[in-house]
Structure formats: structure tokens, C-alpha cells
Length: 72
Image 1 (cartoon, rainbow, N blue to C red):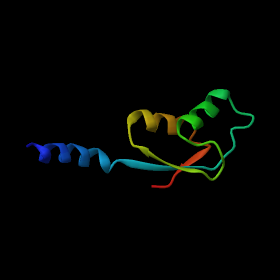
Image 2: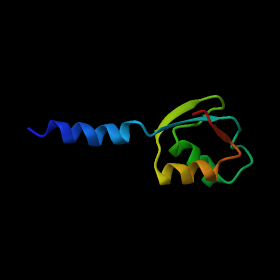
Image 3: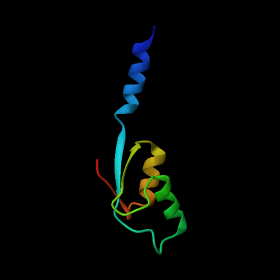
């Protein structure tokens, strides 16, 4: 059985989590920013989402950086 290698790969991705909190409202903003917040699992001020830290997620956070803050 190769359960050791499967656990190693799962452990490599398991530690890459980013916590994001919404601190701003998407009102009076471009609708794509609202859609990006929904894609980040955020849609209310104060809500916190734990997301896998990937380049795509980082790009989405950068797009709405004025509306969110990274907790961890």
C-alpha cells in the first residue's frame, strides 16, 4: 500500500489556507467586485471565509483588497 505518499500530498495542500474577512460594502461598486466577493464566499460585512491559498484566490483577494482583509 502507498498510503504514505497519499498522505504526504494531502498534507502539502492542507497547510495552505487563507482566512479572509469582509470589511467593506460592495454597494456603489462595479458588479464584478460583488461577484468576486460571492466567489470568495463573502456577502456580508464581518463574514469570515477560509479558502485554499491558490494563485486564483490571491488574484480575487487583490481585486477586492479595499473590501476585505486577510486575517491569517
